[in-house]
Length: 418
Image (tube, rainbow, N blue to C red; front, side, top):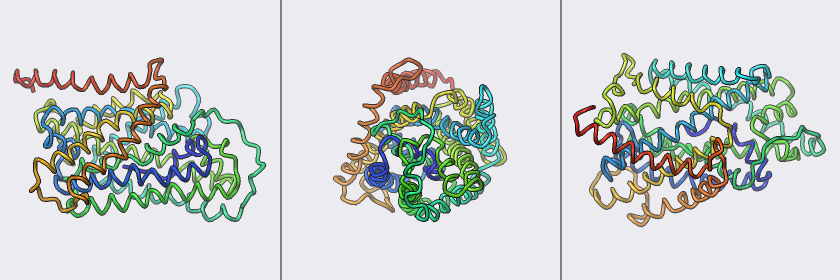
């Protein structure tokens, strides 16, 4: 749910260069992922509820803020989930350019959405097994590149490459790194379906921070040894670099891995996001239809409705999707950090198998660095244009719309219309 390999990191190198890209990939998990992992470790072990972070915020601050947490997460998911079919098509077009022309890319993206929705309707175990196998397969080509790169030291220093169309700068590279390292809370929404969640979540999340960091940094550091110009990097460039290092077979493996990455991430996140409408429906905050489960214990109505929403954003570009995703997701993450502090004050006796160290002060401080990084996303959103509209205004509209949606929901509930 957090990472599908180093795919998607190419624009960081383009915008920041090798040295700063490695520094960004090294510092981002420390400043962004690790504090988030500590927060999620405490709350998921103390409150392993269906809906995860929605349940935490609702318990800490009431129905209105719980609704806002779910609203912001689902709004961010519209942009987040459109990224993965986009990456799938980008890598498929590297292997078969025919699929990248005209409406064909949209058709392929819709097919990814449909197939993943179908796998999720088949149940959580199908999704889990698929994810494990895909992760192993897509990681193998990067491991081969890390081994081959030192033998090609300086070999690409004067290699002529096609000019790219990417205009990502240093701040844009940081935003993409934040996107690559975010999503740790997504696993919390299925806590009731996990064995021994109080013990499993903290260990899994903290271990994954280190694993994901290594999987990003090693391939970039290895390619740096070849002296390939950073300007040659753009979304999908891993395939071309693999071809330069290991020929057509390795290039094909990287392309297939990129497709598996986009597909696998989308597939796992369908499972996560679909539990939000389920939990809200169980709490009476959405129509009861969203709580319907099939014989595989999958919330099929929630899966189908969300898949339709995700399909609507398939036409937006990768960098624009990332900007909006980080902007809206950041607001929901701040509510989770706030819930951590509020619950420390209001429920000091709550059993916490894992705790953020440092008492109440530690619970407050752990959210400071992620908040500062989110300032960068706000700055970038001010200059980004989404369909001719200022990106910051789009993000602000989505945040404010949540309160309007809650007002409508509250009126309907008071009138007995569930």
